[in-house]
Amino acid sequence: MASSPTWFEEGVEHIWLPYTQMKTATPPLPVKSTDGVRITLADGRELIDGISSWWAAAHGYNHPHIMDAMKAQLEAMPHCMFGGLVHEPALRLSKRLANLLPGDLNRAFIAESGSVSVEVAMKMAAQYFINKGEKRSKFVHFRGTYHGDTLGTMAVCDPEEGMHGLFKGMLADNLLTDLPRSPEEAERFAAFLKVNAPDVAAVITEPLVQGAGGMVFHPAETLQWIRQACDAAGVLMIVDEIFTGFYRTGTMFAIDQAGIVPDMVTLSKALSGGVTPLSVCVARDAIFDAFYDDDPMKALMHGPTYMAHALGCAAANASLDLFEQEDYAAKVEAIQHQLMAELAPCGFMANVKSVRVKGAIGVVQLEDASGLEQLKPLFVEKGVWIRPFRDIVYLTPPLVIEPDDLGVLTSAIREVLSGT
Ligand SMILES: *Cc1c(COP(=O)(O)O)cnc(C)c1O
Image 1 (cartoon, helix red, strand yellow):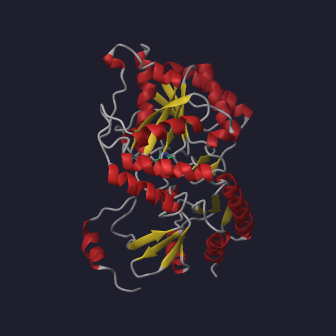
Image 2 (cartoon, helix red, strand yellow):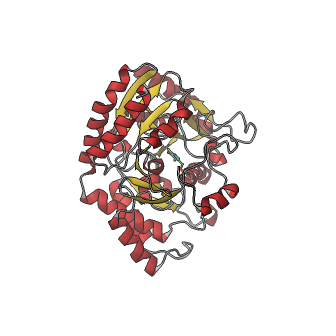
Image 3 (spheres, helix red, strand yellow):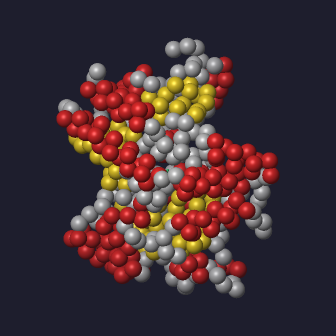
């Protein structure tokens, strides 16, 4: 490899990387620029992106429509405080999301990161009951889910993901159970929720796919059963679409496949087209109404400094333009077919446990994941950016990827896993 740039050599001693054992990890790769589905490294090598920058860059990188919208917004106003002041990009975005989301999901609280939007949803649920004169301090969450890295969201992650053992005593005590995957399990779940309802503000789940938990799929019925159980028990339902939103599973939102309306939905990642940090928690009218009062103490007590960031909202509006102008459902369907056809041969390889595809998510799960770390550099050698984790090698490519480039990604997986 060519020598690294000076900024890398000088700065790498001072940076702290995510989810990384800094002592033993192989050094990160310096990136120079991005374009379309390609990442260019400082030494000039190009990688085809199979991950979309943690599932966010749905339209690929540097999309001219998003770049132009951001340049125009930058000239007018990159950011302005959202307390007592509002601006067009945020209000347009809120109206558009209300139109796109099902039912009466009509009120948007716009924040920066996904974790914060989940915190906001949890706070809304808890205060909803406080405002009604009830104290409910717990959340029901499911094995295998991921909802963020802050202390509040860690407490509704899978205990392993939230590292509950390590942070014992610091995380809120919530109620963990299994996702209902059959009518019998749905009945058991409904009974469990009913018994615990007096303490439970909301049930929180990821729809159709548990992403960070290892790309595990569940049927749309699961969401219907949870919705029914919540209705029967008088408990709110939060659906975290931060990974699944914006066509990743084939429809605009994963909940569209279940035909349900949660009480709160969280969105982030592809919300801004992967360009700026931006998230939103959208609530139904009945939630908003519980805060709408003459009593100032019944107001929602939350307000991040950079909330409703104007530049981010402009990017999100431009991203929504693209989703509206082009047929992303067809794009994802084509990706799904290609992933199925080209990853299927992995199913016959030794050490492969399963191959599964949903929308623009392709997963090869291994029997024995002990060698996964060593595979990472092999993908880079083949000119692709693929990051195996847990026991899976997976693809979540930009939704605009062309068949030839997707073919390079899938053949890299076949070759690396078969050792050729
Ligand atoms: C990524 C993710 C989050 C956290 O979002 P951040 O922006 O990283 O805080 C929450 N929930 C789900 C389902 C996610 O995939």
